[in-house]
Image (cartoon, rainbow, N blue to C red; front, side, top):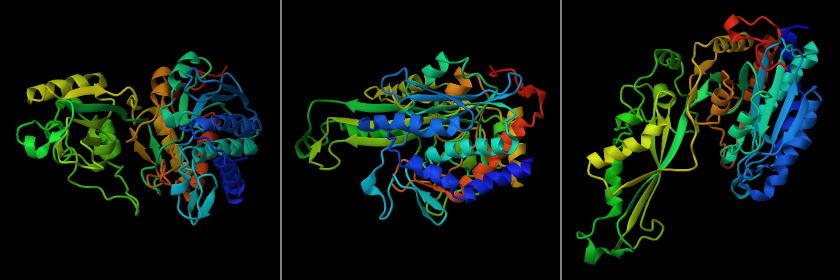
Length: 473
């Protein structure tokens, strides 16, 4: 059997409707990790849906409790064919955000897979049930054609990603030997554009923080006290203005990378963001001057104000408010030290006359930045495989603009990490009318089948890949 036959088998699996039948069954499971009453559905998704699918492919499956009580269960599935073969770890999450049933368009439901043209509506189609379903189906296509994978495969599915992946890092640390592998190949997040196959190699980190001003107890009449009492809202607005410019450029040197590495800059030269027809247009003069749009979102740091409150915005009264608070976020690359962010902001505010502004990092909303070098041999190998399958090269993003728990694999497990997304930025994830594109999922199935076929051929192009050194036990 040949690579071409495996790809044909994958396409036939999708075109026959078998893939969509599996996905529809998975979408129907209300695995909302943000809803306490849905906790049984997290177990049902793993044990009742995914375990039978993987067991049919010869995987040994174990579901395990989360070491953190707030987190949902894990599934670890393994198919070990030979200790001398390379080992791939993959990852996905079976939980979804709240369904928001009442907010979906007429005729659509978060718990029903509904096709409309190229769009496939349903909660989790984009994030992440559709994506890990593609990868499972690709493993099946290779097995069905070759009779074996030709490599060892491990798959870790969690059910708490949408609440920050509590317990994932601890689970990986406690199971380093069981999760040992040569590389992580997984799928989440969006492509650069719907028509652009993409590899991303890590993610920017995220640090949430609050800036607040509390001057007194209670509000005071603006007619009697206006011009006499300091206004916390005005003070906080001016404090923010010394941290970030009116055009979105970060003004605190310690909050910015020293530079964009040349290998990263070279990779991003071919990665211009591709806004969708129903998405917002890029503001060309926003952000760090002198950088391309790709460098701004994939290779630089940003400071964003997520919410600002002073007084009662819904029912304003004629009074000077006593307090003001801004919820902010720094997205950052591996070229920065997040431990320096809050102290740097504190010093900067003090120098500019804002000692009354309190700065505090949030206990939640923190992700560590990671990035695999764009010229790493695993990246070169994967890009070559994608190009061989589709006849065109993929975009290579050194870092995803958003964040995901890649540090658990890159740092705790010390793995090179390659992500192959099967979604796009306009998918509506986390909101009503979430959807995937059938064309992207079908093409993703081809890509993953090609990757898994090539890995099993036993002809890894570069000896530095270290095939078979880890995880085959």
